[in-house]
Picture (cartoon, rainbow, N blue to C red):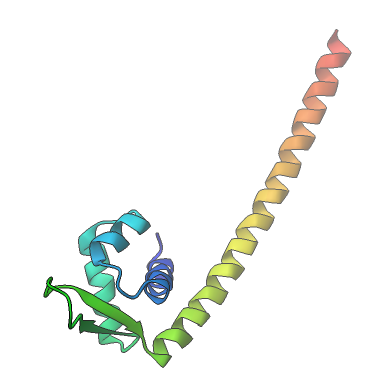
Length: 115
């Protein structure tokens, strides 16, 4: 996963579920806990996310992650880039599918001519 995509996915998940643990986030993204921790810490340092301990939690390591206004803006920017890249990938796949269909059609016609 590209670093930019990772930041986007982490921001996206934390906005949807602020009480998500880093372990849950790692499982949801299919990456290591260490990588999630590194990314979350970087987002906090950049001012995109604030982390606060749950007051009523018995687990003193439980955090509530809140996207800051800068974090929301960053998420929107990353979402737009992500969407554009996925649209380009989709277009490239559609073109490749058409080429393959044409090749298969030609091969099919060629095989029919041999029979």
